[in-house]
Length: 143
Image (cartoon, rainbow, N blue to C red; front, side):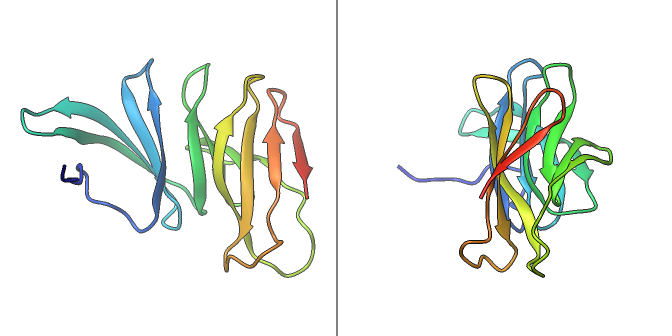
């Protein structure tokens, strides 16, 4: 078996592909570039492929994106959560220790909360946390 890249071309730090069955699109992030990509599946005889439908540029690193039940996208970006595109609506309470942090990967739990990890930009140990965002926009974190 050989592995072939799908289009569009890869980004700087592309991660977190999520299939949105309702819209029939795939979303993923280019973390350090602050981009959210949206593509549709276009079957080709030799390999599956993706056609880029939209790219949303955020003003911060974006760790993850998920489709919202009410439509649109929710992003774990910068040091908080935002609708994409849009401004941050829930910010994390981070330690005042001079460590630059960002959101990392995120997934929804069975209760509908978005669980996201944080990390230091320089990947130093012991600088991350797991945070959860509930449907009311409240954030809870664990050190």
